[in-house]
Image (cartoon, rainbow, N blue to C red; front, side):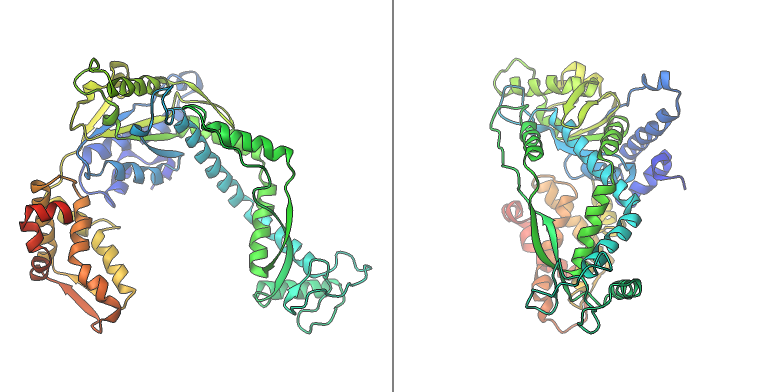
Length: 471
């Protein structure tokens, strides 16, 4: 198989099939979009900059897999990925978040991602340096230095200044290389894990807290001011007594941070954001004008959000605390149920920036049965694993699974259709009794039969008023 970054559309669909049932059209669309990111990188530079991503709108009722497709896509893409609710944004001038904040959030995710990659690259060197620093705490730095006497009362505590201790006998030892190597071996074998060392660590909140209360567009100022103040106020050191394994991990982290070049990280992260960033705009139908834009009131704010969103999707330069970020090649995937409105109710300019429209279909009894049994993270597998921790082997008869799928469809038809999310409620209700009694039960195997499902759900599923409140 190809590497993740160059997955073919078919391989992307196959990977999504492991977790998501049905919705083949949506999977094909995101598979093609993901592959087009790779294709664009193979094009020569003059034309490469002209190739814009083909943004996608996924249309379908709640609980059919729109958000799950985006969530799984994030794992496949190995790219900065941000899921945001379009409804939380407001027009400039109103109280709320402005649309540019999602680019700043995406950039921060890229910084974290690249930093983690860089730290993993220097992990081996950082581990060696951390080990040497820890040994320096246990042994003198030079052979000619007099050995101080321990000041701590606890025999397990190795003070920062007391470094010439022979751990096997408790007698001040000879700070020669054989002793250091012997101590290194003991450290690696875990024989020092119960000992404490004194270590200087950076105290938190050394800079003053700054809070900014203002209109939209200013929420990034708080972190920027805090970063600025942190440069003026030196980081305070605090001496703490911690166990040897914790000290080693702390020193590894500190050495890794020291080895990573943050300027290089910032440069790579911005490039990663611009070239392979993906933003999933959920609930985009909530900012669509309903029945035209002439009704006033909230419609003005909704259309204002669309107008603010338009330049970001078209391609703009957003200021972040790490530098300027261009949005020309960021892929936007929008989704919405569009119950009260249509995609054509979006402003025409924004419609044109989402050329690919995919409709996701409502799920039926057959799909519910597959959702319960087939995916790697199927609900039945999750509940089986949970009850296994109590020593109970949970079994489901096929007829019982089909009965739960059938009841889920019926409840969705009688009340609000929430799609596959109804299965969570149904299963919780069916397994309520066994989940409560599991710690006290003596039996090793519990089998869920169609009769048991009926017993647990019949009264509720048949009473429409109860179904609305319980299922």
